[in-house]
Amino acid sequence: MTTKTIIVFGATGVQGKGLIEALSPHAEFNIIALSRNPLSSSSKYLASLPRVKVIKVPDNCMEEPSKVFQSLDLQKGDVYGVFSVQGYVDDTTMIRQGKAIADTSVQFGVKHIVYSSVDFAGLDDTKFSTFECKRAVENHILTLPIRHTFLRPVQFMDIWLPDVEAQFKMGRTVWAKHTYYKNPNKKHQLISSRDIGIAGARAFVQGREGPIRLAGDELSVKEIQATYKEVMGHNIAFSPSPLAWFVKQVVPVVKQFAKFFEETGYNVPIAEVRKEFPEFEDYRSFLLRHKNKK
Image 1: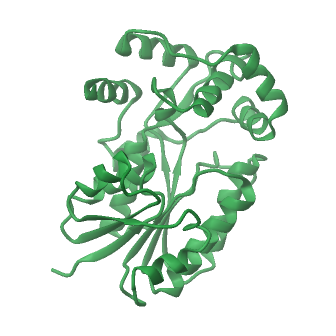
Image 2: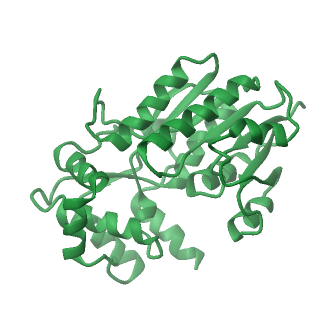
Image 3: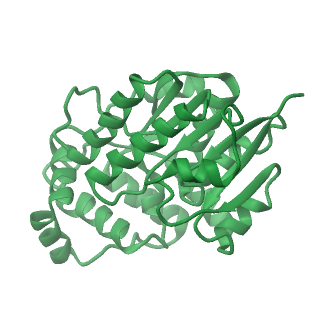
């Protein structure tokens, strides 16, 4: 059996981890997980999975992906697929990095790129620059001679976990306390990062192309809070509400984020998604899985 090499940019993040966990059981793939710190707990975990090799890369690996390929002594045609996800720094950086990884993939003869984008709610322009920068990368990839898959997830269930980083805690506070208060019954769509990884892995395994909209559940703010308390046994922790209100007013990306959810929000047809991905988690199942890890 001929093995196919997959390079994963963003391997130690929640999406990269989800992709690698879903893909590593497939014997036809070898996975190169790029990490700035191979000694981190997340890197060590990835290295313990079947057919996964963790490789140390410089901090600017997404700025100069061609140097990553060269350092691995890879020749044109040696890599079958690339998974590309960027952590948010700013819009310009995200576009530059996404395009650079796609261009390098073509340069080295990669057959298939899976790019983690975002759901655009069916709009030609979301008026949200952080979303539109992902569309810019998608549009660039469309001009390239490479098989491509665009993963388009809604908001991550992961931001509702107890031990999230401060910026995600602030984000959920803005959304729950200062975004939907005028329409408390409005449903909000969520997806597990594990399931984004499952969709990406299936794209490589099956050669699935094009955009894939991804959502696993939809709930109101009250339903999210009630489900969380029922499963986890305590209330969701929020940042101070006055601080969240201030952040919403003065931080441009947060202001745009709130405006998008107030005026539009996601509208992925979840019943259709489940026909292709029946294993996707709802919010309750997601929380139970994380609770049982403890």
